[in-house]
Image (cartoon, rainbow, N blue to C red; front, side, top):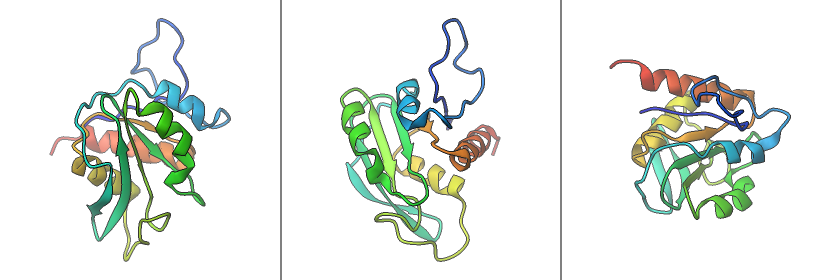
Length: 154
């Protein structure tokens, strides 16, 4: 599974694989416009509870085409993306989920990994190469670690 993370539109002539960019200071809206380069055409049920290690995550998946994953910040839940999911689902598969202990996802029963949670969710939804829109430094770290784990052999 590959993961792409791009949050600021790249200048003309630059490679999509240049570097991971942060949306800090630009907000999640710019993150969405630049995250439209992923490759997944599968669809799944629009909402559900995905099994993850020692728990479940509530998710919503709308649309078809290239996949975009929206991660909410601490103190919020996936509803923070209401306007964006509606706008983007016409041309893309947009996935948003409630992290553990937020929204409709129950709190963790034991230690867990945000990276493993996101990886498990993507596996359940059959998404191989999503664009992920990190909205803060923690999400940047999750995306980097997910990318590394996806590219590791084994």
